[in-house]
Length: 267
Image (cartoon, rainbow, N blue to C red; front, side, top):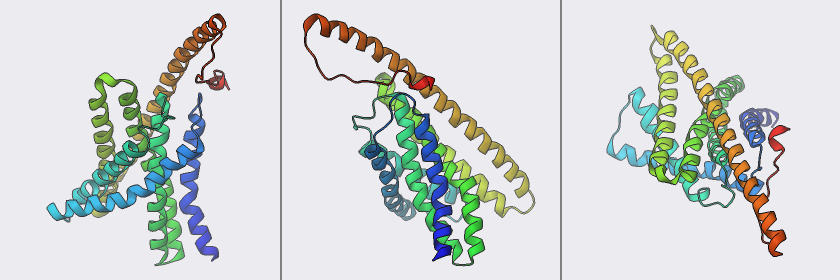
């Protein structure tokens, strides 16, 4: 019982840490807990959808290559399932109303997926030994869970652009999906191939670590850019709010209007 609790905690803790992190980066208008739960649950549902998509791919093409495992059984179907869940559950949500929201919701979907996947891998490894479960949990906490988080950041960045820059919507939607697939596929491919090539595997693993750092830098860049876009968006709403208050004083009418904590970004 105690070992199961330890393994479960190790599986879930990195997911919780990253959810808290991205939630705190949302500076101007925090997303409702119910909507965040919906996104996280959407990531869990994406597991089932992923299984269906992989099954369909396997009926068309089956291969035992590392490329097939990395892209056709992981990167492409997993990111497609997350994308579908985002469009089904979040795209029309009234709370998806500022640039940074796309990153928040896509990250929560990715972390919902990662949470279930992490539990399955850790407990599967623990069937061999408790130490194997711990080792798997530590490695996945450092690599796989942050990977799903960063793939969500990449996808969410472009989904927000698609939401608010309607003139290029299709291009942004496609970019978000394809870049998340590419990042995920390459991430898994480098990690897998470094373990099966005895001679140059170590070199490839070093390249993988370099690419992982670059992915983190890209993710943080996207986070900062959408924070700035949300700040500018908030300023525009603030200006409209001031105009509304003047009109309300002049006309005596009052209607519901979106309110934002304008000083949130300075705290």
